Length: 315
Image (cartoon, rainbow, N blue to C red):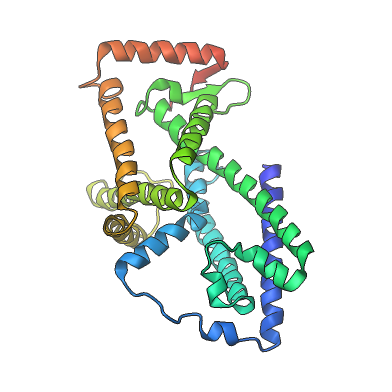
């Protein structure tokens, strides 16, 4: 917790430096780059979908809070937490983007080989600024990785504990109370995906795949508001939010199929559904699961549990 706080403090310092640089430049009357900021804007829906796919992951921190809701003392605060955090992040990001455009011309901003933050630092602070931002970005990435591991491993652990995945995923270490097997699985899966794709395609495909399930959750929330109106809800948001999320999610899931990344998207869907559904039916689903696979799953769970000093945390 303290490590994550320190890393996010580092990120805020770096972002604040960029914002101050932008404010100084605007105070000097340097508006030339901003005047051409929207020149040659592409209005094709497919291009907008790809652009959203590339940036949505930057705003996905709210999702970590939702995943860790079981560890929050007062879950009813979730809407306020998400609303406040998203507002702060959006404000900072917009101010940073304005600062980028103020200091750098549009052709430099569009160059994929240019690290924009470092370019701003070099333009305004010299080589020392480049070193500072390189260190700041590295520390920021470490913080993001820690949060990602913290959250995504809980996905697997909760699914294993509730019987949606094989029980081995639901193992919790008795001493540290962490899902060691789920963390190890995430590390292996991450390494595999790094080997099969470049950064841009990984971001786009991961956002594309995860948003499909976010959309399904939003649709399920809307449906259950009508089918189970009296069901206890520790957290309840105005129904307009899941409706808007579902509408946007359908757009986001549909548009990329008509773009250049359709092949990679198809691979991710094939891996997610083609690999997940058979495993679920054969090992988990009570009507279709195979007895020998159930026994094998129980054996693996017991063996791994002893090796990792872990137990299944039934929920």
